[in-house]
Length: 188
Image (cartoon, rainbow, N blue to C red; front, side):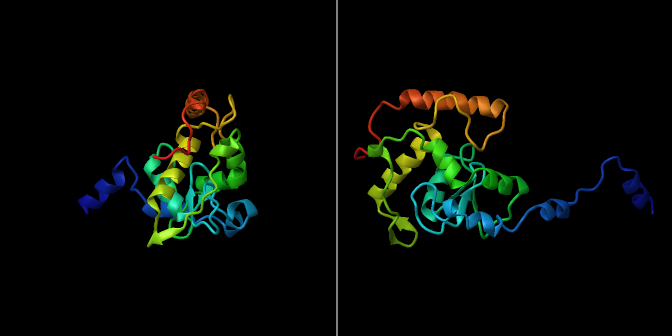
């Protein structure tokens, strides 16, 4: 009995994990995945992608999802569109951005010679040819890490105003300055 009264007088309410689970969704709404722009991977063009970068607001294929994971969560946070529970803000980011808007920003100034046109043909299991994988990884890093092709002075479509937006603008300026360096598709 004394134990019960001590628990009631505790200044901290008990944590309810069910509340957090109730706000998550089983994945993004189907309508978002069925938009024409989201029916192909934002990076390589593979059909029917089933992964997403929830902070960038894009839909990507399995191969590109592995590369996005290697970028680090400070750049890209990858979740399955079918297996993972989604937070409402991730759904809203995908609704606001999507592949078309993201490509318009991150591929704004891509020289045709540097644009990725490859296919992610599997060599076995979920692996692609090593040479093709290197080219694809350089392409994805150029877009999101180095931000080589973004319009100068513009904020990424997935960002709100604030400190994070200022940091991304600084990174965009740096990426734009590096743009005239070595070619993106040179042999590794």
